[in-house]
Length: 421
Image (cartoon, rainbow, N blue to C red; front, side, top):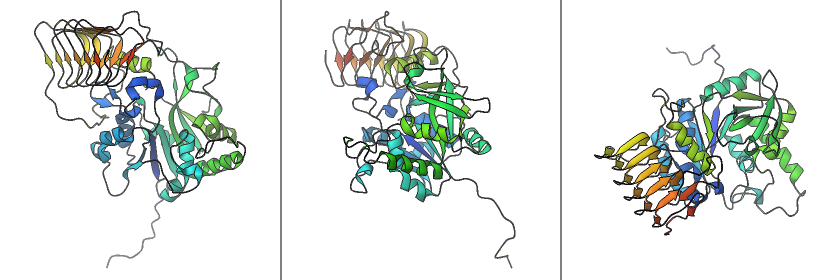
């Protein structure tokens, strides 16, 4: 007879849930995010930004993932396909889409979130019900490779209430620490100060926007802060808790409690939230192995099947990345050519990124620019220019998707989606 009980005691593993915050409007990406969520932006021809956050989680064995979608949610829902490319379409755990709520609670729980900390406040009851002891929270518009098991090990070893992944931006082209949360920590890794987007940063180590929170402490602090804010600002918009982003109140309060630790990410990490960062990251891919891609750590994606890339007679290519279905008969130098894009004979593409289905007609030039999907650059037109600064977000020429360009668009020029110039 099999025993109905056992004297053996097995300690339960800490339950981990992940929240990928992909809801921001991404206004700094201008026309590239006018009709899509920023995490749905293409990267390296074959991927979207959201692919990196989801792939890092699945490769790390984290398979209970909540994906927050707000602005242009349809574009992101189409991309993730219920989690199927990451084997997250399952009955238990898997991918859960979080959408703005209406009629479900207090005013501070309604509608669109007003920052990533505000969003966590809205999810506090979900976190309580989840039974999770740790929640991983991350942005969806960064490219990096990270084993979250190492972050969780640091979190457990330190007995942390919050573990922040940090990275050093020293020497990164176009990066300014003042665009991020600047982090200071002691030799034991305990975070002693966080300055959110300071005018005069006291270092180059910043938060990589990957956090491991102890769930009970996170909920406690969020509610504590909310109580303190209630009634303090009578002019606050309805539906806004006042908690803002993580660096405004939440993380500083946790740092002050003395149990926040840093976990250093020494590998490649880039925030692609501005046009010059987006272009620079692609150029970095073309200069050598940046450590993003490894067959043992696959970046999974949802991409349709396409024909192989084609290079015609007379084409000239140097440091070029061609996506499936691309056809090149002209000159491509230090550039990424997206799926099904065409560079005709006599056309030239230099230090640029072409999205899917772009056509660059004979005689046209695209230099230090980003051209979104299904746009057409007409014969003899020039987009961008060699004088374009790679350290200025406003200097990069951007052509919106499904637009038509018949005349020159200089550095910093913008053509909106569906536009014609």
